[in-house]
Length: 103
Image (tube, rainbow, N blue to C red):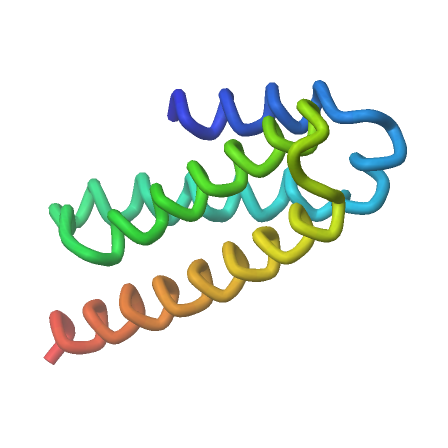
């Protein structure tokens, strides 16, 4: 996914200190990308996919702001926590959809 690669490029461009404080980003981006691909494969192009892609974009943008000195690492970690929460909510929706499909 292009957005995931762009997000990771923004992460790689951060200072060592910023990357160290936000080390979970790589795994969160990987999980969000996997969720987006799974949703697309299921034909779900609604809110769940929109929220997942928006979380990736928000992470990318805050990292660019950190690089430019317009946001802090604390802002980045806050957005990271939001992305994790969105990912967990999307997981619950995917699982619920699969359970309904199995009935």
